Figure 1 (tube, rainbow, N blue to C red):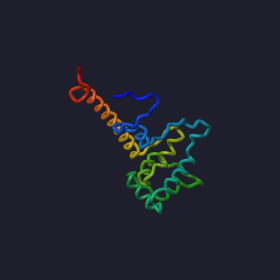
Figure 2: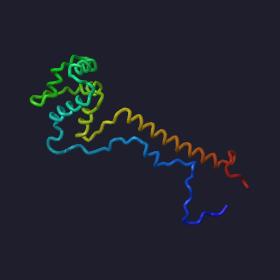
Figure 3: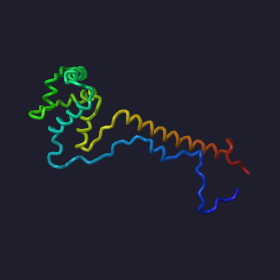
Figure 4: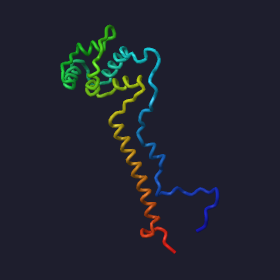
Length: 166
C-alpha cells in the first residue's frame, strides 16, 4: 500500500464519531460567577418583592386566591391572598418567609425566586431536566469513547482479525 503524500488530507473515517458535533448537542450548565461584593448588594428586601412579582406574573394563575389555595396545599399551612399581597406590595412590603420559596416555585412552575436568590451570592440554579440531560450527554460521550476503544482493541487482537504473526 503506498504511503500518503505529505500535506495531503484523507477523507474522514466514517467509523469515527465527530467529537465536536457531540459537544454541540450537550446541555450548557450555567457558568460560575463571583458573588456581588458592592455595598448593599446582598440586601434582598426589594429584590425579593420584585422577584416574587415576576414569578407570579410568569405563573399560570389568573388570580391570587387560586395561587393562595395551591400554596396552602404545598406549604401544608394556610396562605391567604392578603399574605401574598403583603409580600408583593411595594409600599410596605412584608418579608416572604424563606421556607415558602420552594412552594412558590412548585406552584408557579418556575424557579425565578431561586435564580434571583442564587445570583447575588455567586451561585446558580440548574433545573432538574438540565441536570438529567447533562448526565445523559456525559454517558453518551463515555459510551462512544468505550465503543471506539473496544473496536480498536478488537482490531489489534490477532484472534479477532487484527494483525497476524509472522
